[in-house]
Image (tube, rainbow, N blue to C red; front, side, top):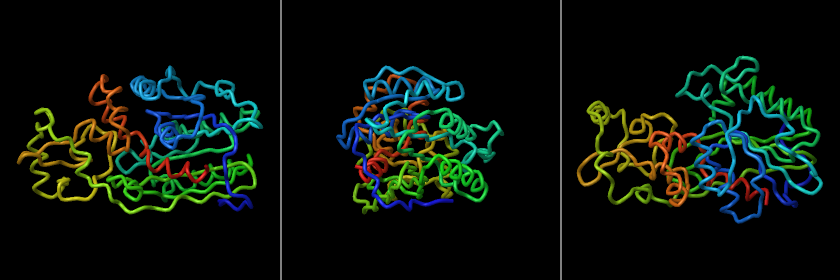
Length: 317
């Protein structure tokens, strides 16, 4: 498996066209927006109608749902790579990789959701011009013992196209976001370039800053089983920690993230608080909140912590 061994530091020097496969609510676009670098929301691919609705509300776009299994390279429209830098991101489903999932893997031809990675291979093979930069994000298990052979096969394929790839597991709490969230990131770039992942920073943002001062009584409706689990130490009380557990897309939100005690009563986190843990701005949540509550929790769990992406993009700029 190759590492970046080029002679030149990877540096973007052309106008950016962003292509987000498995786009979700657009954490990658949000990171570029926050940096303040001009870029074009060029193409996205996202199957979930609620995610598309939130994406458009947050970014002021008008994209429609699409299925990565049916789109073609022509749909992505990569042309004039001498004039534009194309960044293509692919945070493919972790459903069959995560310890919280079925762990059925991502092998080619197995038809698992995580196996949708190989649709990215198909698209790259179809392209006449390739994106200069690829950015992957997934759970750490993508490079775990069960999946390392498939990951190596993926790297080997990228090598044949001329990409040099470097990957690293980064934790959100090491980028001043109070969430213990490890994810594997990989940057692959064409040409004789090298890339260094960003340095970590000290966590100074307190977990208490994400809590709303007053919330609806519905958030205090915690099942007795969860209270018992809390007493038995199987559920974390967030008041006693510097950071939250990993936000997941499962609807068992109090178990996965933890419980919070407010005014002597125990409650679970609100949708807005969970979005804050993913480092989205409150205005992003406000323009998206008219979709079902369960979808808002799911969107947060499926997304990427913006601050981590911001640090990665800064290394390229």
